[in-house]
Length: 324
Image (cartoon, rainbow, N blue to C red):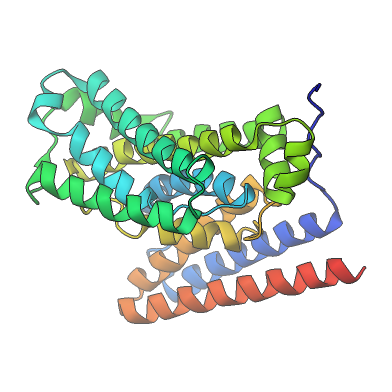
């Protein structure tokens, strides 16, 4: 049976308005940060800090966007980041130089992601359960390999490259820009992206259209794992260490950023630009709280409230669309 093209995602006025609203929230947060901390917030060093903090979580969120649009969820990306950072910073791995370190981090992430995908697609496991199992086992394996010790990155070439700058912009930020741009192209301009929307929107119809849904789901989770591996490289460079605690709770921040960015938890709809704005909103909130010496507890309450509001607005929007 010849393969039929998957349906395109709907792009309409509603999506534009949602993105405009998100951008408005971003501008509002910048104003709040400037008003509450006029001497520090808009300084070059603070903006550099914000971007360096947003870069690793942004890369993870790009992978999570694909997973959620395909109708799944991945609770393991944070633990995979920790495992990859530990594996790539063992003394044995570091002895082969920075190239092998980077490749190791990427392969560990890709391998863990593919295991998730195979369990979900061919093992018929629920995504929540499969990735929860990976969440636990990856963190445990990271602790076993590192003996719960922090492994210092000793390769100076690795640190010089990833902690450096290009055209005055940190390398980590360049990596985020490249990953987001590549993710946008992959999602909106390729067959892979159209199939991801189709699988999340209606997997049975997609299967009847001749698309191998199981194989595509495995690829989506493998892609998310690969981006977790890239995040591990970025975190190892930023913190100059590999640790089983690297990437802790990154999965929650990524899911929150993706939801705030407008990606439907039911699958089939989402944007890469919305995810990027969601990451920046969360990073700005954290920075504003730090600048004003507010306790972490209040920060977490505020983040939780924002997530609840975003989900309620999403349900309301979906209901309104269903009634039209």
